[in-house]
Amino acid sequence: MQRTLQNPFVRENTITIKHMKQFIDLKSTISAWVRGPIRYSPFAHVFFLIRIFFVCIALSQMARATNPNPITLATDASDGVRNFRNTLLVGLQPTIITFDAPGAGTGPGQGTIAFAINPAGTISGRYADGGGAIHAIIRSADGAIIAFDAPGAGTGPRQGTRPFSINPSGATAGYYNDTSGVFHGFLRTPGGVITVFNVPGAGTGPGQGTFAGNINPPGVIAGRYVDATGVAHGFLRGPDGVITTFNAPNAGTGAGQGTFVFTGYCLNPAGAIAAASLDASNVYHGVLRTPDGTMTTFDPPGVGTGPFQGTLPLGINQEGTIEGFYVDASNLNHGFCAPPTASSLRSMCPAQAQDLSKALQGRASTRQGRSREST
Image 1 (tube, rainbow, N blue to C red):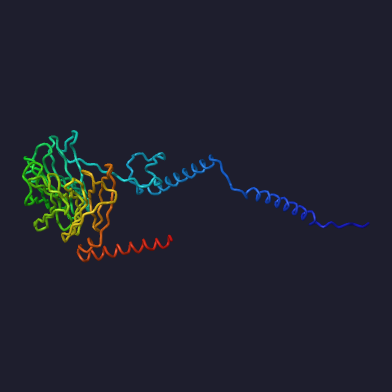
Image 2 (cartoon, rainbow, N blue to C red):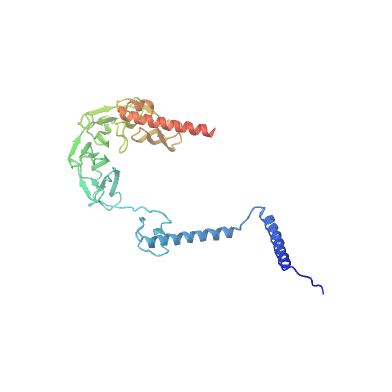
């Protein structure tokens, strides 16, 4: 009897081939399905983002459990899972410190005003008391507040001492008005010594006098004074007390016109001043006075030329860039930023001028490189 021997691998191979055929058919089906764009319903996107959000929350809470004192400045006392403001996911939240000077009034228009701060965190400001009189304050970084009044400062409503600027060493400059409404400049040293000064030619009537509002690191003070006819002029007071006055080339000579150096940020470390002039037509123009005394007037494109329109600079930085705003013909305000010019750089002290010139050349090279790349 002849016996046929069956290959034990034939059935297995047959099954394998069948499975492979099914796999190939399935792959073909999948390949055809994924050739087009893959689309998800809007709900799928939402659910996916929700999952990611809660995963981040969980990771944040795990990090908080590992480090119970994370670098976060939120002040909520709750530390539960729902306290999202205290999670690292939200990011750092700044702590805002509020303060009121002792003796500050609590009525409308009264209270504490902080005006300037130096690199050490010392703040120069003032407060109005319950009677409306104004007093100066110095707040150190540790929160200690010193109040002071310039000698001769008035004590009636809207009279008193106003410091506007503070330099890195803690010296402050400002002005006060006396009982007759006349203004006087003052300098307060870090040690508390107060020096009162008046610019020669300053008027002695109400609303006239000396308005000191800027002090730089060397101790130079800049501001304006109003003479007996109501015309404003600029001035510069050196650390030795010597005062230099100046008038912008196009400044008007009528009451309320002239040269204005505003308070706070209009004097840079090199001694350059950003000012404004009000001409005979009552139009404002920007003025740059360099440390050597050279004055240049400027106006941004689109500035208005009607009464009390024009350019009003409000600050200058250590590079000589001036910022402020201008009023157009429709009495709409616009901001501006005026970079330093080559002539203004040359008037700086040699070392600073050289550093700034190199910096500007570097920026110009970078802009040219980017321009070549874009073309």
